[in-house]
Structure formats: structure tokens, C-alpha cells
Amino acid sequence: MSNRDNAVSWPAHGGQATALLQRFGLPANHAFEDVSANLNPLGPPKWVAAWLAQRFDGLSRYPAPDYRAARQAIAADNGVQPAQVLLTNGGAEAIFMAAALHAGGRALLLAPSFGEYARACSAHRLNMTEHVLHAPHFVCEVDDLLEKATNADVVFLCRPNNPTGTLMSLDTIKALLAHTQTTATQVVVDEAFIDLALGVDALTPLMERYPQLILLRSMTKFYTLPGLRLGYVLASESLITTMAAHQPPWSVNHLAAELVAPLLADRAFARQTQQWLASEQPRMTKALKAQGLDVVPSHSCFFLVRPEAAKRIQGMTSARLFERLLRHGVLARHTYSFPGLDGDWLRLALRDGPANNRLLKVLHDCLC
Image (cartoon, rainbow, N blue to C red; front, side):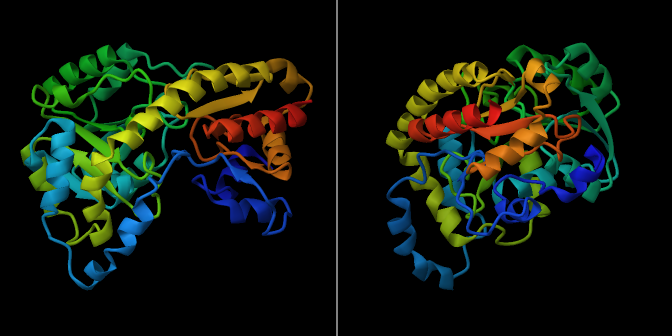
């Protein structure tokens, strides 16, 4: 079976275990640890379950259509005005709404990167061009990026990039914004993992100078609430007004909207998460390399890896390693659905210390 054929039959997102267990003939109750979805292992915060249970009565009423309290909390947290905030049903809705602004136009996408940008552009009939990031470091060449952006109506970026974990520098972002200001090109930066990243400069101070900049955020990854669907857009007031006019009424449910302010107020949880990330991320970078893996330099809570050249020569492909890991109780993220990777790499999510140690033990057994 070719890589292209494989891409059709593999799940397009992490956390989709059922299809993969069936694919390899494993029973539905096969025990495994999931490192395929990039979620904060410390969450959700302990108080969230009781908080939600106490607010079920609110489900009998429509949410406030303007989500004022949530928008005010997000604005205060990001140093912007509430009119520059749009609450969305997860980061996915924000991506599709950003693409809708340029329906029928031209989009520039990085590859490899998150597949929802291409899906959103396809849904809104955008003609897509790719700016390819090359292995093994997947560095973005700024001159080539600016040249291709000249002919685009919108550029989609992911920072830190998923699945590589790489971080486009602030200088490159500024160069792109200065360039696209002259070409009337919009720049959409998906910062779904910005709160789960190390060494990141904030882009919000650039919004006033560059009104073509749109920032997309997700709250589900940092707080481990992917089933609740909660995200938001930061942009100029005029862009937010335009996007809001195309958003379905009551797109965000009552519980999600009401949860925004208390989540952002939980500074202790944020500090605990940053301490975990600062400790485990560099430790695991070194440990994964010591296992005989190529590891793309990551700034976030996940790693793009593949067996080193010597092991690949001996027949240890990423596809073979994926299957061995699953049979040994670890579900990794395949890369057949990421353009430019074709299944040659695996993505591993960072977990807490004990879980990371178990992963290293299984990797050692599978790579030997």
C-alpha cells in the first residue's frame, strides 16, 4: 500500500483510537496510553467538574448572544478591547470563519501544518498554494515566504507549528506583516498552542500597527477540554464585526461561555502548567534523542520524531514503529494526513513525568 493510499484510510486527527485498533486487528478493550492528542496532562483544573455540574440549570436558557462576560475576560487577559474579541466554537470554527472572509480567493499555506486550514479553504473555494518546509528542521525561509505571499489574499500560519513544534521567529512575522501590508494580504496566525509553548513572543502588540493580522486561539488544549469546544479570535474591531455577522447565532454553548472567565482567573493552574512544561519539555527532548530518534527542535508540548538513519537502514520505519508502539500500549500520532510528511514521521505528545518515563521504556523496547 502506498503512502497516498494510506492517507485515505488513516484518521485525520489524534485521539481517534477506534479506527486504529481495528486497522491492526486489536480488540476494542486493548489498553493503551494516548500520546496522539496534544493536551495538557495536568488538566482540566480540579474544580471544573463541580463548577459545570452547578450550572446545568443554565442549559434551559439561550446564552447571551454577545457573550459579553467571556469577551471581557479574554480582552483583559490579552491586553485588547472586548470589541476585538470573537468567541468561537473551538479553534476549528475560527479557522473556517477566517477562510470565509476570502471565499473564492487565493490562500498560502505552510506544509506540513494543521490540515484544517486546507479543509477550510477548500470549503470556501480558495485556490491554495503551499510554502513547503523541508526536513529535518522544517525552517521557514523568509524570502520565499514573502514572494509567495505577494499573490495571496490570505496566509495561514500555525505558531508553534503543528505537527513540527517549530516556532516562526518574531522577526519573520514582522517581515511578513510589513510585506503583506503593501499587498492587502491578510495574515491568520493560529496560536492554538501558544499557552503550551516555550520562548514565545506575543503577537498581540502588533495588532494595532498591522490591522491585517488575525490571531486564532484555542482554550481546549491548555485546559484539556476538547469536548467542550471553546476558542476565540483576536483581530481589529472591523474584522471582528465582519466575522461575527457570518457566525451562526449562539455558536458557543452556555457552559463553555460561562467557563471562560474562571478558567482565565486560575493563575495557579497556569503557573503549574508552565513549571511542568519548562521541566519536562527539555528533559524529553534529550531523552528521545538518546533513544535513537531524529527529533525536530520543538517549542511546544509535542515532538515530531522518526527513527535515525541507521535504524531506518535496518528497516525500522515510522510505520513499523507506530504499530509496535500501539501493540505495546502507546498510541502515537501518524503523519499520513500531513502534506509533505507522508507518514515518515510520528508525533508524540508530552505527558506528565511518570507517563513520559513509561513512553521512553516502551520506545526502548520497540526500537531494539
